[in-house]
Amino acid sequence: MEDFIIEYIEKLVLSDYLGVGIIGSYATSSHKKWSDVDLVCVVEEKRDNKVEIFKDHYFSVSYYTQDDFETYIKRPSLQLNGLEALKQIKIIYDPKSLLKEIKTILSEFSPTSVDKERSLYLAKNEYVGYIEEAQKALQGYMDHHVGKMLNGIYGLTYGMFQVIRLRDYLSITSDNDFYECVMTHLDEKDPIKVLAPQAFGLESTQLEDQVEAGLEIFMHVGNSLMTLFTEDEKEYGLKLIHEIIKEV
Image (cartoon, rainbow, N blue to C red; front, side, top):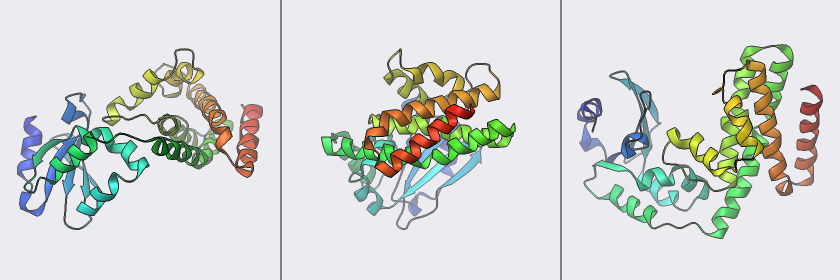
């Protein structure tokens, strides 16, 4: 384990916790230079999660109660977002074997067709929520307002990839492999895979082109979910897509 992580753990009063573990890239040794350290702390009473800088590294500390863990494996959206990470948790402190138990339970978990169906509808709801981001990016694009474009890009790139992840029930071990996981999953000829490097700014391009690529991804993802929409949602979504096509 990295020395700076050991130092951070040593400054904690472990008796205040029911368990402490590391998830994400530092648990799987896939961390990069700027990766944050994801700590999971089990506590008696719920606390607000926090981000702390220590020794020039970001520590993202998430607090869970025993009740949180009990409900965790019953909720498909949470299973998807953290299932793989908790399967590979590196346990630091676990006097009552709580983390060991949740790791074992999740390792044996196999999603049902019902879980996947629910995840599909969660993807639809996520998409509807990001319509506002599409409007924001489009308005910024038209007004040459860099701030609006940058805010909109969040929903048009990362947000759309989250929708794809929910739609296809993809699990990731950490944020570091999020982009790679979705890209690997997509077919080589999928237009989203072709657009993604530009939309995420991985290719040298103008900001306007980046927003436009993000808008195109938004359209493709929306079309793939259209059969799940209610008539009102479908009408609203199609209206927005047509406005985007017209203006861009």
